[in-house]
Amino acid sequence: MILAALWLTASSAQAEALQSSKDQETSTPQWQGDVLGFEPPQAGLLGDMLGIRPIFEDHGFHYNLGYLSQTSYNAGGGYNHDKQVSYIDQFALTFSQDLEMWTGIPDAAIEGNIVNRNHDNNLTRDRLQDPRVNPTDLSQESYGGQSITRLGWLTFSRSFMDRKLHWRVGMMNKVQDFDQIIPCDFQTLSLCGGKSANSLTWYNWNVHYWGTTLQYKLTDELTLKTGVLEQNPQAPSRSRAWSWSTKGSKGILVPVELELKTQAVNQLPGVYNLGVLYTNADQQDLYEGVSGGPGASDPNGYRSHGNTWFLYTGFNQQVTRHQDDAKRGLSVFYSLGLADQRSNYMHYSTATGIRYRGLFDARPDDWLGLGVSLVKLSDHYQDNQRYLNQLSNATDYQDPNYHPVPGHSVTAELYYRFKVTPWMELQPGLQYWHHAGGVSETQDAWVTALKTVVTF
Image (cartoon, rainbow, N blue to C red; front, side, top):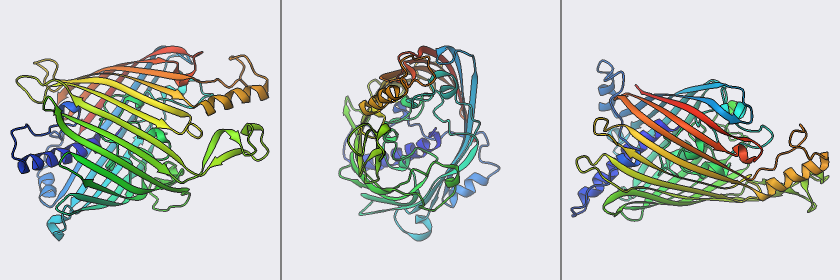
């Protein structure tokens, strides 16, 4: 889902690490993110485009144009056993215009992202999960709701204080600054990147909202990030795809994150983060009413909370290095998101897994990945489902009026990614779904997947 942005982030991270290593009088190898999943951009299908790309580069315009498709097939189990092949795809253009070369302002740049998504084929919605409960995962993480072209971000940025302080402002997205220590390579959503999107108050990748952010390098390894962003529930709507309006805003978001890039573990690269997200926008309680009882029968409706929070953390650490190639090795990752369960139906979510880059000598650029995630549903959400069953006098799961009471869900995925050419990757995978949507009555499911990535 965020492949192009991750490539851009990886390039910036490697450039910063290289500069840092030049400034330090040490024999420690430079921080290199290849084994962690942050590979630099490769030569694209179109090459230098008859000399056009080098001209752009010489004038400070850098871009990545990529294609992504994701196919899922319910091989067995799930809520609906009827077989279905679900297919989605997207084109993503991520670009930046260097302004420093024209203005002399340190690191000044205009940055943008445009994403075109296609098809309304969602296997999770159609086959895997009971439609009477809220989703806890997606088999195709890039599913974006039918065909649409959106502005992901358009921002101005620059640095101060000898490049220790970096400032960004404009119509932005969280992936530009926050919770970017784990790449989005798995096809299941819960294993794709970090957990901060589960706050349900800001949005990933191709949805923009107004804001400004600051990153300050406390040390060469430790960065403090913060900002003020618009909290707008209407941001993902189709009408807001290209809008610069703040209509529908409910309040502000204030994220604070510490990110540590280090080589403290056997001189191998690792990146760690800890963040909290606060908003003053009103949030509706999932169970309690204004009068104190269940909101479903309260004449004044559900209780409103004047603020909410979300905590997220994780790490991505390389643990082995191939003796002949520093870009091959094993890494482990972990992520956790903890929410205010009064207003967020996912109380906590967590994921862990391993990746190996270059497992076979004959395939040094291939990847092997294995991950497992868990989502625990909110007590308030469960209590509301139980109370709705009392109101409708529904006790049988097969009754259409019954509201399933979700507990927890577990999703696992195994993939192998073939680097077919420098510009094309094929990634077959196998997913296992346990209690999809948190509903124990739903049969465990097996899903076969195929992800295709093309770089132009």
